[in-house]
Length: 304
Image (cartoon, rainbow, N blue to C red; front, side, top):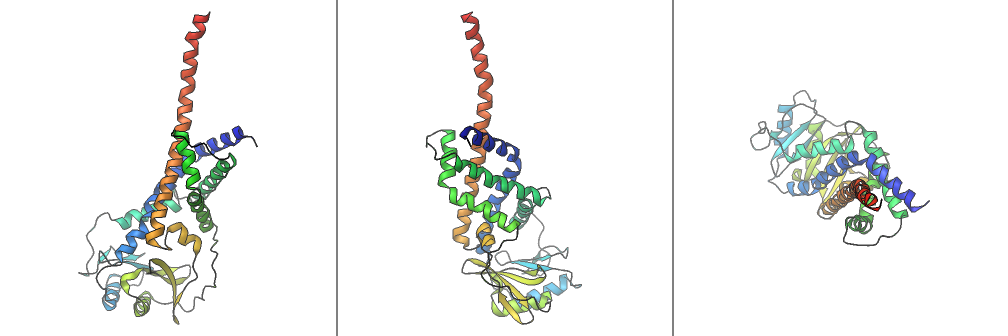
């Protein structure tokens, strides 16, 4: 396949998927900071288990909550699916309303995973991103120059492992590929949320807990251990660590918040640079053509 044809395909795929890719990359940049925010939030005052269970029963007497999330730094607890506001752990009352980082991350995650409510749009745009990178590779090594095109090609080649790993792990999540090295334990008898909180608190510090709740037909907890966000299954027999889902850990930057989160920020900035410079290169070429034709006309008149 000739280089001009590869360049044409590269350009048109970019133009068709420019807006979805912009939304996905921008929300990915926001989510890149989430592991850092979460790992800093676990260093808060100690959280009393009995107090959490009492608040859970008070604010969710009918047991409608699917789960809860805890922010030790801000001393807040949020019930999932109960329709209740965030709870101030210090006072036991509903927390003051207002936008928070948690709300921003929640919006960014929904948009990142279901753009305009359509998961297929995210998946197809991610596949297009991989094709763009493969076409760029087929066009060969770049000549590095201090130009818009030089920065575009240089960013693509120097950041290639990061920018290629991000969409590939995203596609693994979309298609359910986990590459888990072990077998997940059986679900067992369902555990009520208050009992799950007591069981988790018996083995882990509640300040390190990000969430406890029903997920995938089982009760699960997500807990930070040594900077890594681990998933645990909760059943009547106890708490069992789940096999690591490496595509998710890599894509979300949860394998090591202090290392992976900055890497994901760099990846998102590189992808934004590639998308913006690619569109600018196309726009400049489109604007140059009319000028060239306009410059030719006076020369043709003089020659005549």
